[in-house]
Structures are given as structure tokens and as C-alpha cells.
Image (cartoon, rainbow, N blue to C red; front, side, top):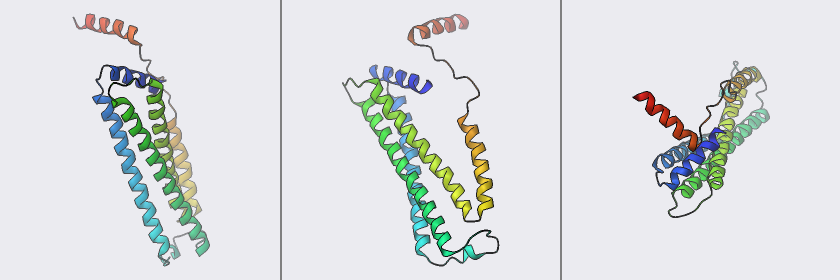
Amino acid sequence: MTKEHGLTELCRQAENRDVSTALSVIQSNTSAATFLASVSLTLSSLIGAWIANNSNIFLQSQLIYGDTSATAISIKYICLLTCFLLAFSCFIQSARHFVHANYLISTPDSFVPVSSVELAVIMGGDFWSLGLRALYFALNLLLWFFGPIPMFICSLVMVLVLHYLDSNSRPLHLHPNRSQGDKFQMVKNNLNL
């Protein structure tokens, strides 16, 4: 509800050609998505190079609990690599949708429906969320290298953290529509006297 209202207000501002704030917010999201995509790709490359290096001396330590055979280690590397590549592709799609929304807003003398901009921003946000989830899951897979117990503990902590982040115990702020906004502005002006 809040995102749709914000996008409606953003498009209303676009009609007045006061879009600098909206474009800078979308540009910030695009920059963050691009940065996280490059981080994911870098980590994927690092894991690929680590897979190519056949010395697994680090994983033969006595501190590692669980299966340390070559097959199990290869499966762990491939799962972690897949997770980072999934995060990379989600962040790239997020940046693509944000750039498209930026284009729709800033196109001069066009009558772009609000629903098109809403769809682009919401899809960008959804891919952003999926990319972050892939990075969160990669942390669990990274701890899998140290055994099933650290992975299990991290999974429990991750469930609690994601539950806290995804739940909203406070009611959302109800944004007034334009006619109510004028009434609120009049009340605010009377209070300032």
C-alpha cells in the first residue's frame, strides 16, 4: 500500500516536472544493485579460482566436523558458486528494472501510465530482495564448509533475523490523498500561527 502511494505521488510530481528527488532515489537503488552485483560476481570468480586450485589443505583441519571428502567439498563449492551467481543475476535484473523506471519517469513530453512505473519499481525491488536472500543463504552455505553444526546454528539465526526484518508490528502510516493533504496543510498552518 505504501509503495503504490509513493509511486503515485512520484508520478504526480513527474507531471509537474519536479522529478529530481525521484530520479536520485532510483539512481541510488541502481548504484547499490550494481555494486552488489559486482561483489557477487567477484565472489563467484574467487570461488571458481578456489575450485580450480586442487589443494584442500585448509579443509583437512581437525576443526572441521563433517565430511571432508573431495566429492563433498566439490558439492559445497558448486552450491556456494550457484548461490552467488543467482545473487548476481537478481541484482542485475534489479538494476535493469530501476533503469527502466528512471527512463520512464524522465522521458520528456510523454504520457507514461503510472502503472508502468509502478511495475518497474516493484519488479526492481523484488529482484533486489531475491538477491539479498541469495546472499543471506550464501552465508549459510559458507558455514557448511565448517560442518553441519555451524550451518544449522546460522540457519536458525538467519530465520530469526529474517522473521524480524519481514514482520511489521507497527501499522503503516496512512498517506492522505490530495484533497485530504490540503486539509492537513491548512491545519498545520493554523497551528503554526
